[in-house]
Length: 431
Ligand SMILES: *Cc1c(COP(=O)(O)O)cnc(C)c1O
Image (cartoon, rainbow, N blue to C red; front, top):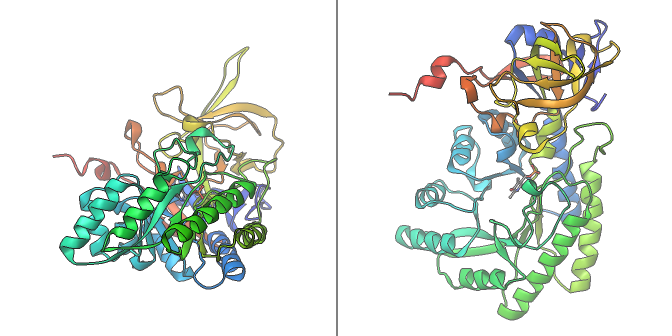
């Protein structure tokens, strides 16, 4: 099985976090997303403990909200004592509504509006991650009028190509995010931040990309950022306290991809970063990481009911399910790989090669191609694995399809996390 929270029971059905997936599909209906609570806690603890062990007090993970945003995840983040990053007021609002202390929130985004700035300052956001000079000046203006000070990090583009899909590469110089070191704009915005009376510069942030399995893009980025920190200290006398290296560690979606031990990866990273820091002569700042995918992806599974099974003679076979791109647009967007299993016949021989498709009026509504599963019939339950990240968070109502329910599973016991969207929910804003 792809991950250790998956199994097959005596009925030949898929189990997830100790529960029979088919029984949960019957109980809650499909499409249904299951979330393994213990898996998320375990993933968080690996990051948290390794960062503390390697870099000491003040170094901790921030959950990247964009991967999966709903109140329950912030309650869990709060219990586990980690921070969070947000890219919108909607995410900040959701965290606050769940009782999450926003002093542990880092507010990202390349275009914060004046209303966003006011909301975040007034609700006590721990730090802004300031993207650009326009934002910095707008923030200073607001702070001056409110007679407040605000901690910030500056988002810097180190100029790294982490060799992943181009839509999820963000650390290169030509990017909509941040200020580049190479062009001198990183230094300029640092000097500007230091000159503004209501801005408290705590340090720097960078994010090199996503679904990365090697430590080199991170250690390279850290090396460039530490050189920048040393340069800024020599030129201005300012010493950064915090270096946030962003998110991006990879997750095993399919066989053949590695399953990273995040604690071991952080230890390896730390060893290189410490050597580089001492070579550069730069005191080590607190290190923050912003994992999204690697905290929640492998804690999610989506269940669907099989509808039609169609073989086009001389071509291929299609298995249609009762969800699709509205709940998981990632194959349509990036041809993202996923492992597909037939949950109701998980022990049977997989010998039916097919495309698993959704029910939208759209040829691109494909969940996965070249899938090998036992031949399904109408009514079987199909599972797409590793859907905890960037699925529910990206879900839409395209074709007026309601969003699925989400259920927590913990050691075999289930509990509703998000109820299934209704047709009334979908029309409630319409006047
Ligand atoms: C997307 C993103 C993350 C999280 O990335 P993952 O690949 O999900 O770990 C963290 N920080 C920033 C700034 C991001 O844009």
